[in-house]
Length: 211
Image 1 (spheres, rainbow, N blue to C red):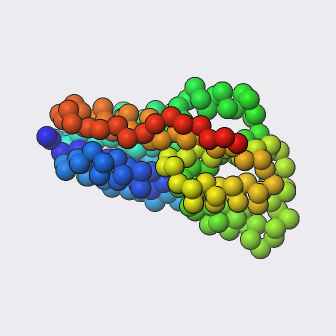
Image 2 (cartoon, one colour; image 1 turned 90 degrees about the vertical axis):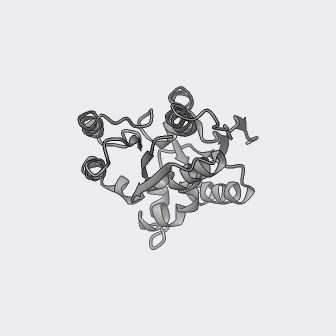
């Protein structure tokens, strides 16, 4: 099998590593960019371009990002390098699918979403970064227009579910859980690797938790 390189957002790194390990892909290499780039999405295209410029010509590439707030600028970079990214605007689309996310948004536009990564780093990325740790009253201001929290889980992990429920409680939002598995992330990786290797094993399933 020819060499495969996945250039990924750090927020997807753990899940990509799990897929690589589950399928026993030996010639797949992962390089992650910092997840904190999402705080400055205008820097994502340049960071990805710098990575792509160093990739050998005989390497197959997948860029594990959505558009991620770049306004199409990431796509322009990928076109110039002949590379492709994951489907969707962001990691929620990647995991749950664009149709599901559209339906969830239509059902309740005021929805705050979490993934496994965001649950694990909720205190740092939400509570600390938004200043809620120092000023708890800010939570009601930041989330005044939200009506629920939906946890899109990649793993069926009771500890993560419990943490997501605590996050919803802390923000004063009703909790809903939907198990997406690896969704479009798994599909894209399998398609990329299976172009040379027919041994990949899907490991996700579609299950919705009771509310």
